[in-house]
Length: 135
Ligand code: FES
Image (tube, rainbow, N blue to C red; front, side, top):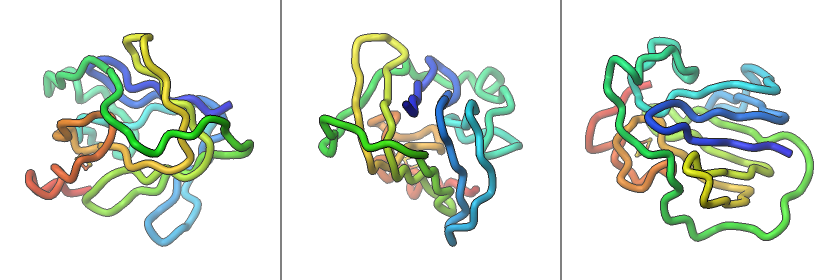
């Protein structure tokens, strides 16, 4: 099973079958475990480089509102697409677990914040445009 946890004040930690793709669909990397930047400050995006500590990234790791949850997940890898200057596009089975341990969302499609500014973390709410996020 593919699992993602938005760590409190830290990265999105993923385990399972994870594929990282560029916006044009090119496979960039495969992982069984990785940590993706959520604060928007990493110098090694999409990966976490620990910059969240210097940036004092504040987020409890809870799950925001999400309307497209599914009951049962399919099998196979989850694909994470790096949307230019925007979110992480999720396609494929993923169980998202709150770092607070009190919520789980199963999804097959989602848009996750990687700029640090969303008011509905870990989901993207379009705030990357407001802050002029570049990546
Ligand atoms: S990537 Fe942060 S709000 Fe969209």
